[in-house]
Image (tube, rainbow, N blue to C red; front, top):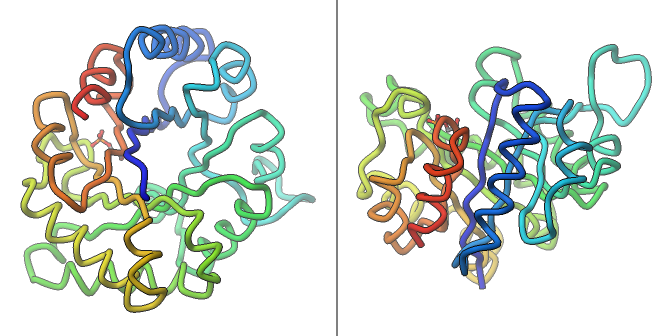
Length: 250
Ligand code: PGA
């Protein structure tokens, strides 16, 4: 059966010392509770190895991106094997900020997913519509296309290794959360798209997280929806207490 997961996405925040401190705090806080979900922190590349050294196995570690090549003359890039060599087990791919600011297309993301899977990294694959697509009513089709283009060449076995994160772009960092009903409508749609391609069992086993201004005050209502299996948390993951407030919403 699918897992409940709360994953933090630190984005381009914290110095190394601050990041290691925050990771230690989350690690300690997690020890003190009986979490009803898997907990993961996705941190900047520069922090991965140090953070891996200060957390226990109860807390998962991930990167926020990886390169679309394995190695070679790609100055400034960080490959999936490099990420895996730090001890990280997850990698966020296809975040809307990567799509929007760094031109990441479905073709590029398809390659990244394959490279991540080859290193036994679990991709947390992000999908979601922009405001205009929400307002003009095309949002279900937009998300279907994002999934089909980047992921539907995978075998059912490989697809089963993914975590998906639905992040409406208009809700990211804006304080404007999707309603629990809007999230549930999209998550149910995503699950039906997966079922159409890979069958009901693969669809039922896929964890689909919600992301976009998720905080302790709204997490419970969103996570209670049957097709929402947790959250990908940006701003609220930068504060240990608020992140733990979301973890304990389960
Ligand atoms: P937010 O970001 O929680 O700050 O809205 C979520 C994300 O972009 O993953």
